[in-house]
Image 1 (cartoon, helix red, strand yellow):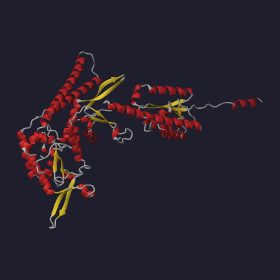
Image 2 (tube, one colour):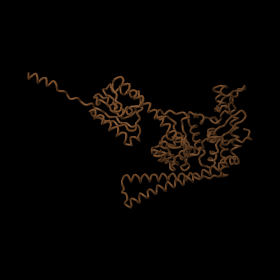
Image 3 (cartoon, helix red, strand yellow):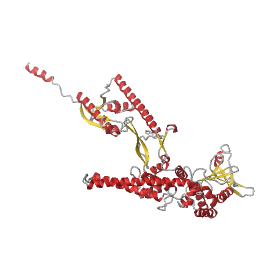
Image 4 (tube, helix red, strand yellow):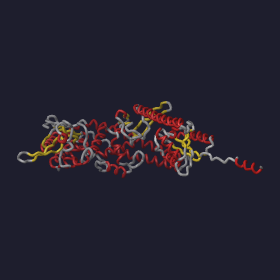
Length: 558
């Protein structure tokens, strides 16, 4: 009997049960929340207490600072999933403060939960307890859908608030473009509203980039450059982007097409998530201080368009026909191309004809056609007789004198601003040196870096001042001798130059030749003429302008 009793006592011993192994997943949506050191420590404290209260063993912790949960493109989240699905099955549960920390997409969350379950891992929310029966499964799915809805609603509200902030002229926090800095505009309670202001040193770099594109740099005898050449020129001379990197074709093209430089910053152009362009009605224009005048910006856009093979084919620029790319139909605005015809005697004639009519028929345009030799001669004769005479050039450009005077005043203001920047940086350096001499501070690596940074700022400001001074106050008057020389040079070129050379000069001076049934309008830019006459660039560097700013007189036969 005693032996039987001993066997019964042995059968009642209960084996030890292994506690569940838990991994914590902590997440905040923005970098500002992560830096605030509020949400993440709170999540860690609450989830840790929850695990200890349930007797679970915390074996890992995954922290995702400043990442949205609307999708699974989160590096820490992906690392956690990969580890949870390993063959050694390291976790039994993944604990989150709320399901919104895990996912804010209903479908994405459900697929991820099912994937983890196949590997023996449950997702547990300490504030939203659910289970595995059908009603609790449905509750979790409803929570996921509601979190997704809340996230999208919050996104709409944030976008609406930021658009309204932009409409009021305030900056929304993105990195400013090259040439600008962010300054405090006003304070509303605890919120600081900010605006863009011109950085005088960087603004000179922007002006230099545009000048290189349309006229070159006469200080270094550099002609007008294309995008790749401008990138090489800037990088070889130590110029850097806003973030301190080397220039590339993409960033340079963005600078050359950014309307902020003429006072119009366009906000909300593309979707941050899909990068698709938004409708024009959703784009907000913010008025900002201009760095460039509109005519300079327009001339750069004209050059970019003319050099774009999708817009202007190389054969138009380099071909043997004098007026291709310039001549356009007055009826439809389409270009005019070469067509040929044969007379009864077998003689072949060449014409400029409307390309739209030639390609699409008379329903597209009733079209114009004109003999090539006649139009070439008519345009050249009108330009020589009605434009390239000293008297007519002076008359055309007389209105630019006032513009030049205004430009000179603006350059003087820029020089004063740059000089003030130089003095400000030098004062900072003097204060640092004085503190070192008086023993207030000791030299260390941090102070050395600060002194080096200030010296770099001073050298940049001095270089910008010297460049602005060298390109500054140009004469607002017209030199009669230069006007006469320019007129003689252009007449000689148009009379005796080869077709490619004549074509290049015409394309640099003219923006369009509009051919109507009875009239031919010749349209060009006064700014280009003035720059050419003033000798601010080499003739080969001339670029087409925009706008009907000068044309043959109405009393001409053209």
